[in-house]
Image (cartoon, rainbow, N blue to C red):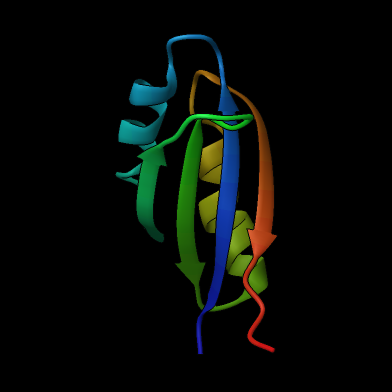
Length: 78
């Protein structure tokens, strides 16, 4: 079973399109879409483990220029 998460992203004004395009190229990202509301981009990502998700996916996302804040929400299967 893979670990999946939604990552909610706030960007600098006018940067959501650039941010979502850049994030869409990161390995482990399965979806990156511009949205309206308190967040500018919502990402769905996956990895084999929670550590891999953090180190190989979330860390790369957070290094994308134009991002001001992220919130990672791991998906739980209850």
